[in-house]
Amino acid sequence: MKKLLALGAILISGTVFAGEFPDISISDLKKAIADKKVTVIDVMGSASYKKGHVPGAIDFATAKASFAKSLPADKNALIVAYCGGPTCKAYQAAANAAEKLGYKNIKHMSAGISGWLQAGEKTEKSN
Image (tube, rainbow, N blue to C red; front, side, top):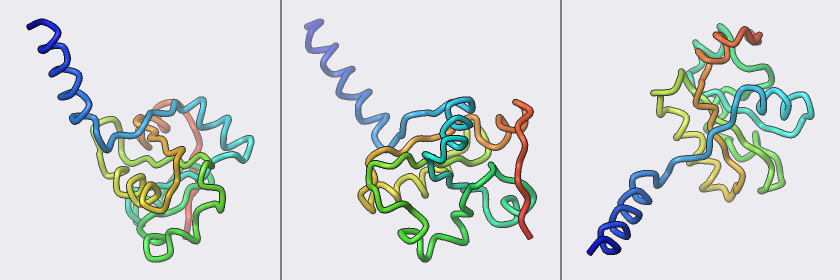
């Protein structure tokens, strides 16, 4: 009986996290940006993007129509999506869109733009 319950718990936990993407820390993202080994996607909306976004990030709202053209040719390239913070799930729109295009290395900066700012990191502004 215990084995059956444990198996059920594993199966349930597997479905709860379906569609989730692994987290990436701010420090790991900063290193990937510095090494030019990441495509960062901001899912905060164009107004927020203009006010301040992670340096080099793509505005998903603007890029959505031609999203595939915004991403690298290498389907194993690191793609990182973020939104407002740890409780925000808007990042999933970009992460799922990248996954549907065949990308395999998609991560989520769960700290979001709020965590980025709290960590004292700089943002870029757009017109």
